Image (cartoon, one colour):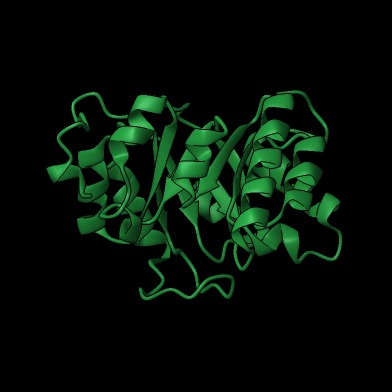
Length: 224
């Protein structure tokens, strides 16, 4: 079901608004990482589960949503929109390839926020037509955490896409290391999504503290 032929979906209404700057936005693949990062002050996070059986997926999503509520965090569930609705998630994140098969009306009617991935100006236009809560842009640099059909955008293209998206919160993602964060932020993007910069760091707590400081001006464990 695409947005254009979903008669119950209201593009005019769109999805609930999100704050303009989401700050540090880790994307992690396990309940363990959700709990670790929420406990040290991360307030925006995405659960992107891979390679688990259906029963375990639902169990982990339900538990992650409860953790998100406990910490009053912005927890987005990647892809599993039915389970996100069932368990009352804060939001859902979808790739472009998911838009054709997702019941956007169901997500909208449940009151969940929606984030959408984009990789170029064409996909940016598709995302805007849905009026999501935020728009992710990437991948900015080469990345090993996910097979990508597109080429890295680089900072110049990121800045151009951010400039063309003044009415939505924006998120940069893809190969962003701690060292690259200042240059990414200089494009005007409102949030920085990271994966391996935290999960593959020698000291994840130190890496998280550095990222929170660079992106949000916070110290590890600060209140929101």
